[in-house]
Length: 292
Image 1 (cartoon, rainbow, N blue to C red):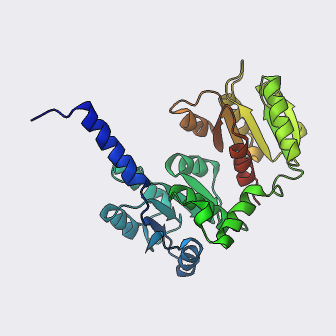
Image 2 (image 1 turned 135 degrees about the vertical axis):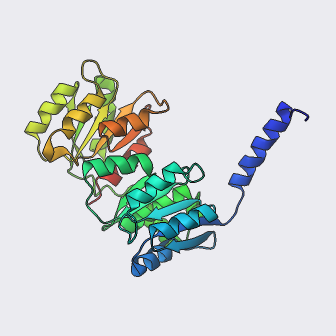
């Protein structure tokens, strides 16, 4: 057998890339047992560039996923046969399925342990509520590689409103933890410009102490690489306090190494941003976590 040349190998790689980015109909699977909810999701996302399949149970969903290649899956956790958690476990065990982006769309209250498990297995979690249609449209647009400018004008406005509104941030209290005063100044300036009340700490112990003084804090942004008490320990200590187990915590780290996100989430972080911080990405995450 003739060994392929490096040129042939590169050509194969470029062919796969071109196949991926080429315009085509994207495949979406909606796993939801409530018929009215399924119709609502279809109406929200349906377009000529999207083909939507539906499943009312976990077993049916797994059959479809094994028979057909999907670009994204929307998954409700409450299913009549197996739970969404069980379905995610089955997906992780199947190497053909584990890379499919799954957006969990649920109305149930999640325990800290459940939320941590979901964030390691799913690409995104959208809690059903006031702005959940906008968030679901936004998240699926990302994983289905949809161009926002090509969406109907009404759908564009939904996403723009989600990204641009400072209403969820206004007068909310945030603790910023970083041992570098330059980073504190930059984050303080950014968040205050968008209406937030910022409290700062230059080490982990001070941040923990501030929680006693500010029980109404809505969010923590913590650097990971700090002396004495690092960000992982800060997150773990916060999660040990019953009243702050569900508090949104976004970890900031200068090391965008493989495994960092998982390590942050295992410690109890809600989300993760690599430094140097992209301010639009950070604001988008803060808005997302502070949505009512």
